View: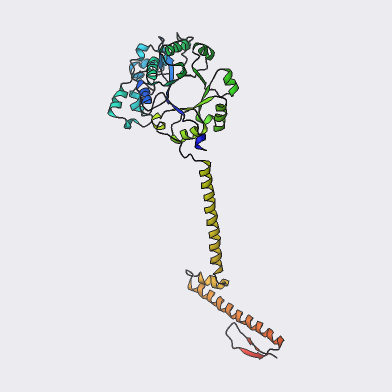
Length: 379
């Protein structure tokens, strides 16, 4: 494609911060994402039993905290069923060193190791304060608490209240939940409404949705361009490799969610982009070289065949009998001698035809067994 047709560089949204460099959904992880020039944060919000919105991706605390050590009888309880006073006592960084989910622990400095080991669960208010400080967007996804939870019906209201009180600009908030979308739009009309359900542009506009959040392999380049023509942006996840980021950039994707902000932030231009002129030059040059090689091979083969003498089968067999037994070689030699003798007889016969034109000659009576010859006069 032409470089002037290239769309702007996709924005990078840190998935739970930078989970390759710090424990996910911790304040340290989002701080690292901001330092590595991520354009926004992707967060998962859960409501504690006493109504404090905090960040947690899983429904339980088992994977990313030491809940088994502090509350062994509540290991499988829903994270939303804990009070914030209990939640803030949990360590949210030790698991990162035990599991090493991205094999990156060895690359951390001693300072980062110490900081990561002492991370705790992060409140929504804290990450919003960080986003305001760095002027970053926040993509919000919510987990609804269980039916027996005291905020089961008001979970969205509690989250909205926390966001609006943080002072973050509404246009920096990307709202993903499908539940009560119209109510959210009325309370916070400046939010960017984004859906995770693939629909046509007309249906999206009717719902006030301005973007789609999809897995990168659930949409192709043509669909991305069609959505863009209808003023629908696309955010694709999870994009961690520079080559994939480059492909999506060329396709016109507006933003990507990534675990590797520190990698993608270094990609300043798409990998292997070339103009149509460069492409045609490579294609034509390759064809010319291929044709030259093929024609050269044909010319070489014709020259080799033209320089070869004509051999009868016995001569070919004799020349190839390098590793044959002496008996086989002798037999082939006899066949070759007989063939030469027969050729001589044939030549004599041809000469006898000349007598029809008035020439005289003799024909040899040749015995292949080496007997004496007799000459017969030809009148």
